[in-house]
Image 1 (cartoon, rainbow, N blue to C red):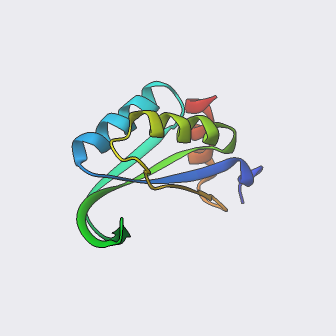
Image 2: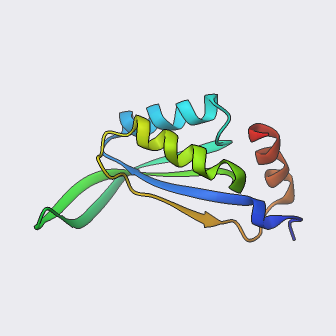
Length: 109
């Protein structure tokens, strides 16, 4: 069990392309707002926008950080993102490898 497990979160983001996803992810890692980002191409998204059903190829990104950085991460994503309303959600990490969580805290603290 991880001590202070509520401190750790995964930020989920969608991007229009791998280039956009890598640019945002690299910026956030360099700025030490996230410890790691996993960029996964090949997501098919279906949603309604302006009254029209959209079917788009997108890129999924999972970023690991600490809760105290969430506001800054979301703000920075909104600055860098190509979408008017980017998908950004946050989920708590409820358990996992304590050594990995220690590494996250060292990267972003």
